[in-house]
Amino acid sequence: MSILITGARGQLGQELTNLLTERDTAFYACGSQDLDITDERAVENYFAKNRPTVVYHCAAYTAVDKAEAEGKKRNYLVNVTGTEIIAKACQRHNTVLVYISTDYVFDGTKDGEYLPNDPTNPQNEYGKAKLLGEKAVQKYCDKYYIVRTSWVFGKYGHNFVYTMLNLAKTHDSLTVVDDQVGRPTWTRTLAEFITYLVDKKIKCGIYHCCNDGNCSWYEFACEILKDKDVKISPVTSAEYPTAAYRPKKSVMKLSKETGFSSFKDWKSALSSFMSDKLE
Image (cartoon, rainbow, N blue to C red; front, side, top):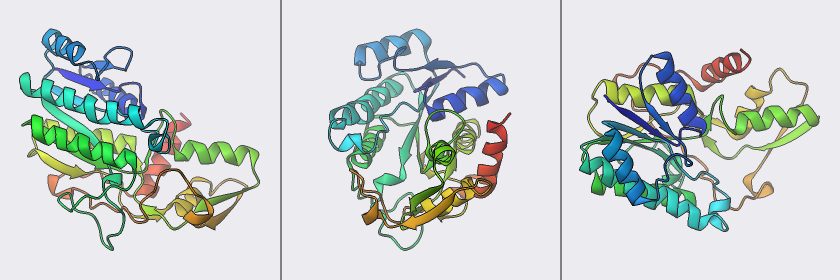
């Protein structure tokens, strides 16, 4: 097996490189400086030279609010065009593609959990681009896994956990939205899940990976800062407007039918992350 990780310097990409290194598994790790996924010739040359049998496509434009305006063009270039180029290359070289998608492909109006085959209806530009990326994978590639996730946090890069911890250093009180509900996802869980799909040769298709249990951003913040001397107050989305629409309830049903047994609940995952972060 020859493994390629795109977006290797991102939050998930770094977690995945760390996991594979722990396992003593060889891989190629490419950031945008190493491989421009929007350059079809560069991608083909890379595939022809290194012949990856598996691609973990972690490269993405993830500035959700900027994607509504000044980052809109970049959002579509990376998340749609780049993904299409990678998918076509995977098909030409008989390569398994793992594409990371998002809960933002849903509109957040379903009462229950979203299933992988539920109708999609993205309400922001980031979600629309990631859905088009999903469709490109399905159109151009025969061997693929589309893995949707949400509220990602981890040791590497920027995320909500670090934001809350940093704000708590300089603020006595914070306000956090309490009318958006979802499932936090530790990058370690996500990295273990996507490698599990490939290693166990699970049937190709669309899967959901988050940590178990639901919470609001307010509840998430309270758990993050439970040992800090800071007051946290709930506010509505209307009181904290953002450029991009966020789904009110984007709770995705976990793909437990795969046999993956490490969907630990989000509080346990957060605790494990906090312990690991301090090491």
